[in-house]
Length: 276
Image 1 (tube, rainbow, N blue to C red):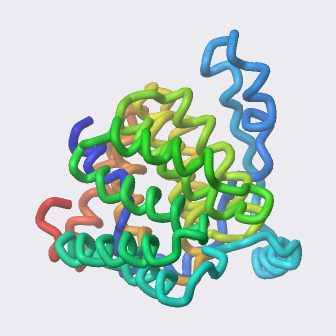
Image 2 (cartoon, rainbow, N blue to C red):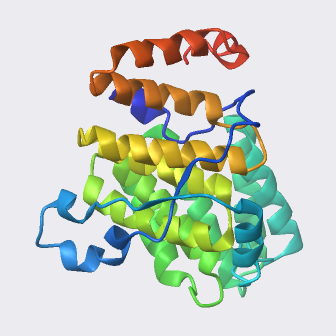
Protein backbone atom coordinates (compact mmCIF):
# COMPACT_ATOMS: atom_id res chain seq x y z
CA UNK A 1 0.00 0.00 0.00
CA UNK A 2 2.81 2.41 0.85
CA UNK A 3 4.53 1.60 -2.43
CA UNK A 4 1.36 2.34 -4.37
CA UNK A 5 0.91 5.65 -2.56
CA UNK A 6 4.38 6.75 -3.62
CA UNK A 7 3.33 6.40 -7.25
CA UNK A 8 0.15 8.39 -7.16
CA UNK A 9 1.56 11.38 -8.96
CA UNK A 10 1.45 8.97 -11.93
CA UNK A 11 4.38 10.50 -13.78
CA UNK A 12 4.69 7.28 -15.74
CA UNK A 13 6.82 6.74 -18.83
CA UNK A 14 5.91 4.36 -21.59
CA UNK A 15 7.15 3.14 -24.94
CA UNK A 16 4.34 0.94 -26.23
CA UNK A 17 0.64 1.05 -26.77
CA UNK A 18 0.18 3.69 -29.45
CA UNK A 19 -1.51 1.33 -31.89
CA UNK A 20 -3.82 -0.45 -29.49
CA UNK A 21 -7.49 -0.18 -30.54
CA UNK A 22 -9.73 2.17 -28.54
CA UNK A 23 -11.46 0.41 -25.68
CA UNK A 24 -13.47 1.92 -22.86
CA UNK A 25 -13.79 5.38 -21.38
CA UNK A 26 -15.77 6.68 -18.43
CA UNK A 27 -18.72 8.81 -19.55
CA UNK A 28 -21.05 11.06 -17.56
CA UNK A 29 -21.54 8.82 -14.58
CA UNK A 30 -24.61 8.81 -12.37
CA UNK A 31 -22.49 8.16 -9.28
CA UNK A 32 -20.85 11.56 -9.72
CA UNK A 33 -24.15 13.33 -10.35
CA UNK A 34 -25.79 11.76 -7.31
CA UNK A 35 -22.97 12.20 -4.82
CA UNK A 36 -24.85 14.86 -2.86
CA UNK A 37 -27.65 12.40 -2.17
CA UNK A 38 -25.28 9.70 -1.06
CA UNK A 39 -23.89 11.20 2.16
CA UNK A 40 -26.18 9.10 4.35
CA UNK A 41 -25.69 5.92 2.32
CA UNK A 42 -22.77 3.53 2.14
CA UNK A 43 -19.94 4.72 -0.10
CA UNK A 44 -20.24 1.81 -2.51
CA UNK A 45 -23.93 2.39 -3.04
CA UNK A 46 -23.29 5.41 -5.26
CA UNK A 47 -20.12 4.17 -6.91
CA UNK A 48 -21.77 2.83 -10.05
CA UNK A 49 -19.51 2.97 -13.06
CA UNK A 50 -21.02 3.60 -16.48
CA UNK A 51 -18.77 2.64 -19.38
CA UNK A 52 -19.23 3.16 -23.12
CA UNK A 53 -17.21 2.06 -26.12
CA UNK A 54 -15.42 4.87 -27.96
CA UNK A 55 -16.51 5.08 -31.59
CA UNK A 56 -15.32 8.43 -32.98
CA UNK A 57 -12.72 9.78 -30.53
CA UNK A 58 -11.48 12.51 -32.87
CA UNK A 59 -14.97 13.84 -33.51
CA UNK A 60 -15.84 13.76 -29.82
CA UNK A 61 -12.67 15.62 -28.84
CA UNK A 62 -13.36 18.43 -31.34
CA UNK A 63 -16.93 18.69 -30.12
CA UNK A 64 -16.00 19.23 -26.48
CA UNK A 65 -13.27 21.72 -27.33
CA UNK A 66 -15.76 23.88 -29.21
CA UNK A 67 -17.57 24.47 -25.92
CA UNK A 68 -14.82 26.96 -25.07
CA UNK A 69 -14.02 25.61 -21.59
CA UNK A 70 -10.47 26.32 -20.42
CA UNK A 71 -8.06 23.46 -20.99
CA UNK A 72 -5.07 25.18 -19.39
CA UNK A 73 -4.10 28.06 -17.13
CA UNK A 74 -5.60 31.32 -18.44
CA UNK A 75 -2.98 34.07 -18.99
CA UNK A 76 -2.37 36.16 -15.87
CA UNK A 77 1.10 37.69 -16.32
CA UNK A 78 3.65 36.82 -18.97
CA UNK A 79 6.60 36.46 -16.60
CA UNK A 80 4.64 34.53 -13.99
CA UNK A 81 3.03 32.26 -16.59
CA UNK A 82 6.42 31.39 -18.07
CA UNK A 83 7.81 30.46 -14.65
CA UNK A 84 4.72 28.39 -13.84
CA UNK A 85 5.06 26.43 -17.09
CA UNK A 86 8.67 25.66 -16.23
CA UNK A 87 7.68 24.58 -12.73
CA UNK A 88 4.94 22.28 -14.00
CA UNK A 89 7.34 20.47 -16.32
CA UNK A 90 10.27 20.41 -13.90
CA UNK A 91 11.36 17.02 -12.54
CA UNK A 92 14.21 18.55 -10.52
CA UNK A 93 13.16 19.26 -6.92
CA UNK A 94 15.98 21.77 -6.42
CA UNK A 95 15.10 23.64 -9.61
CA UNK A 96 11.44 23.52 -8.57
CA UNK A 97 12.31 25.30 -5.32
CA UNK A 98 14.13 28.02 -7.22
CA UNK A 99 11.21 28.50 -9.58
CA UNK A 100 8.75 28.64 -6.70
CA UNK A 101 10.84 31.39 -5.07
CA UNK A 102 10.71 33.35 -8.35
CA UNK A 103 6.92 32.90 -8.48
CA UNK A 104 6.60 34.35 -4.97
CA UNK A 105 8.79 37.29 -5.96
CA UNK A 106 6.70 38.01 -9.04
CA UNK A 107 3.49 37.74 -7.02
CA UNK A 108 4.82 40.26 -4.52
CA UNK A 109 5.73 42.62 -7.38
CA UNK A 110 2.10 42.60 -8.57
CA UNK A 111 -0.03 42.79 -5.38
CA UNK A 112 -3.07 43.98 -7.34
CA UNK A 113 -3.22 40.77 -9.37
CA UNK A 114 -5.23 38.29 -7.23
CA UNK A 115 -4.72 35.42 -9.69
CA UNK A 116 -1.04 35.25 -8.80
CA UNK A 117 -1.98 34.95 -5.14
CA UNK A 118 -4.11 31.81 -5.38
CA UNK A 119 -1.92 30.22 -8.02
CA UNK A 120 1.16 30.66 -5.84
CA UNK A 121 -0.68 28.92 -3.00
CA UNK A 122 -1.45 26.06 -5.37
CA UNK A 123 2.19 25.68 -6.36
CA UNK A 124 3.31 25.92 -2.75
CA UNK A 125 0.86 23.18 -1.79
CA UNK A 126 2.04 21.02 -4.67
CA UNK A 127 5.63 21.33 -3.45
CA UNK A 128 4.63 20.17 0.05
CA UNK A 129 2.97 16.93 -1.08
CA UNK A 130 6.17 14.92 -1.74
CA UNK A 131 7.40 16.01 1.70
CA UNK A 132 4.36 14.45 3.36
CA UNK A 133 3.23 17.83 4.71
CA UNK A 134 -0.35 17.15 3.71
CA UNK A 135 -2.13 19.20 6.38
CA UNK A 136 -0.19 22.32 5.40
CA UNK A 137 -0.84 21.65 1.74
CA UNK A 138 -4.58 21.25 2.29
CA UNK A 139 -4.71 24.51 4.26
CA UNK A 140 -3.01 26.34 1.39
CA UNK A 141 -5.44 24.78 -1.08
CA UNK A 142 -8.47 25.75 1.03
CA UNK A 143 -7.16 29.31 1.08
CA UNK A 144 -6.63 29.25 -2.69
CA UNK A 145 -10.12 27.82 -3.30
CA UNK A 146 -11.68 30.61 -1.22
CA UNK A 147 -9.93 33.21 -3.36
CA UNK A 148 -10.37 31.76 -6.84
CA UNK A 149 -13.10 33.10 -9.11
CA UNK A 150 -14.57 29.84 -10.52
CA UNK A 151 -16.68 31.63 -13.11
CA UNK A 152 -13.68 33.33 -14.73
CA UNK A 153 -11.04 30.74 -13.85
CA UNK A 154 -12.69 27.30 -13.82
CA UNK A 155 -9.44 25.55 -14.74
CA UNK A 156 -7.71 27.00 -11.68
CA UNK A 157 -10.43 25.66 -9.42
CA UNK A 158 -10.40 22.18 -10.96
CA UNK A 159 -6.62 21.92 -10.53
CA UNK A 160 -7.05 22.85 -6.88
CA UNK A 161 -9.78 20.23 -6.47
CA UNK A 162 -7.60 17.63 -8.19
CA UNK A 163 -4.66 18.23 -5.86
CA UNK A 164 -6.95 18.13 -2.83
CA UNK A 165 -8.29 14.78 -4.05
CA UNK A 166 -4.77 13.41 -4.52
CA UNK A 167 -3.80 14.34 -0.95
CA UNK A 168 -7.00 12.84 0.45
CA UNK A 169 -6.35 9.66 -1.46
CA UNK A 170 -2.87 9.44 0.06
CA UNK A 171 -4.40 10.03 3.51
CA UNK A 172 -6.91 7.22 3.00
CA UNK A 173 -9.90 9.58 2.91
CA UNK A 174 -11.48 7.70 0.04
CA UNK A 175 -15.07 9.10 -0.08
CA UNK A 176 -13.87 12.73 -0.06
CA UNK A 177 -11.14 11.95 -2.57
CA UNK A 178 -13.59 10.16 -4.85
CA UNK A 179 -16.10 13.02 -4.80
CA UNK A 180 -13.37 15.45 -5.82
CA UNK A 181 -12.27 13.19 -8.64
CA UNK A 182 -15.86 13.07 -9.87
CA UNK A 183 -15.56 16.82 -10.46
CA UNK A 184 -12.24 16.55 -12.27
CA UNK A 185 -13.56 13.61 -14.29
CA UNK A 186 -16.46 15.71 -15.54
CA UNK A 187 -14.32 18.76 -16.29
CA UNK A 188 -11.58 16.96 -18.21
CA UNK A 189 -14.18 15.05 -20.20
CA UNK A 190 -15.80 18.32 -21.25
CA UNK A 191 -12.47 19.86 -22.27
CA UNK A 192 -11.26 16.75 -24.08
CA UNK A 193 -8.12 16.58 -21.92
CA UNK A 194 -7.62 12.84 -22.36
CA UNK A 195 -4.31 12.64 -20.49
CA UNK A 196 -5.57 14.30 -17.31
CA UNK A 197 -8.81 12.36 -17.57
CA UNK A 198 -6.78 9.16 -17.80
CA UNK A 199 -4.83 10.07 -14.66
CA UNK A 200 -8.13 10.77 -12.90
CA UNK A 201 -9.38 7.31 -13.92
CA UNK A 202 -6.21 5.73 -12.54
CA UNK A 203 -6.70 7.49 -9.21
CA UNK A 204 -10.35 6.44 -9.05
CA UNK A 205 -9.23 2.91 -9.82
CA UNK A 206 -6.72 3.08 -6.98
CA UNK A 207 -9.55 4.09 -4.62
CA UNK A 208 -11.60 1.08 -5.74
CA UNK A 209 -8.51 -1.10 -5.32
CA UNK A 210 -7.99 0.13 -1.76
CA UNK A 211 -11.65 -0.69 -1.04
CA UNK A 212 -11.10 -4.15 -2.61
CA UNK A 213 -13.77 -3.53 -5.23
CA UNK A 214 -11.68 -5.29 -7.84
CA UNK A 215 -14.10 -5.18 -10.77
CA UNK A 216 -14.67 -1.43 -10.56
CA UNK A 217 -10.95 -0.90 -10.14
CA UNK A 218 -10.38 -2.90 -13.32
CA UNK A 219 -13.04 -0.87 -15.16
CA UNK A 220 -11.31 2.38 -14.26
CA UNK A 221 -7.89 1.06 -15.27
CA UNK A 222 -9.37 -0.07 -18.61
CA UNK A 223 -10.78 3.41 -19.12
CA UNK A 224 -7.38 4.92 -18.37
CA UNK A 225 -5.72 2.49 -20.76
CA UNK A 226 -7.88 3.65 -23.66
CA UNK A 227 -7.42 7.31 -22.78
CA UNK A 228 -3.63 6.96 -22.65
CA UNK A 229 -3.87 5.58 -26.18
CA UNK A 230 -6.21 8.35 -27.33
CA UNK A 231 -3.94 11.04 -25.91
CA UNK A 232 -1.69 10.50 -28.91
CA UNK A 233 1.37 9.59 -26.85
CA UNK A 234 2.78 6.38 -25.40
CA UNK A 235 3.04 7.93 -21.94
CA UNK A 236 1.76 5.99 -18.92
CA UNK A 237 0.61 2.87 -20.78
CA UNK A 238 3.24 0.46 -19.47
CA UNK A 239 2.90 1.25 -15.78
CA UNK A 240 -0.88 1.11 -15.94
CA UNK A 241 -0.40 -2.55 -16.92
CA UNK A 242 0.98 -3.10 -13.44
CA UNK A 243 -2.38 -1.94 -12.09
CA UNK A 244 -4.10 -4.45 -14.36
CA UNK A 245 -1.87 -7.28 -13.15
CA UNK A 246 -2.49 -6.46 -9.50
CA UNK A 247 -6.28 -6.46 -9.90
CA UNK A 248 -6.33 -9.63 -12.01
CA UNK A 249 -4.25 -11.41 -9.39
CA UNK A 250 -6.68 -10.29 -6.69
CA UNK A 251 -9.54 -11.65 -8.80
CA UNK A 252 -7.85 -15.05 -8.89
CA UNK A 253 -6.59 -14.77 -12.48
CA UNK A 254 -3.01 -15.58 -11.60
CA UNK A 255 -1.99 -16.82 -15.07
CA UNK A 256 -3.09 -13.60 -16.82
CA UNK A 257 -1.50 -11.46 -14.11
CA UNK A 258 1.85 -13.24 -14.34
CA UNK A 259 1.72 -13.02 -18.14
CA UNK A 260 1.38 -9.24 -17.94
CA UNK A 261 4.22 -9.00 -15.42
CA UNK A 262 6.50 -11.18 -17.55
CA UNK A 263 5.86 -8.86 -20.50
CA UNK A 264 6.51 -5.78 -18.39
CA UNK A 265 9.85 -7.13 -17.20
CA UNK A 266 11.09 -7.08 -20.80
CA UNK A 267 10.03 -3.50 -21.56
CA UNK A 268 12.63 -0.70 -21.80
CA UNK A 269 10.68 1.24 -19.15
CA UNK A 270 11.08 -1.55 -16.62
CA UNK A 271 14.71 -2.18 -17.47
CA UNK A 272 15.48 1.53 -17.05
CA UNK A 273 13.47 2.01 -13.84
CA UNK A 274 14.72 -0.22 -11.02
CA UNK A 275 12.00 0.81 -8.55
CA UNK A 276 9.26 -0.07 -11.07
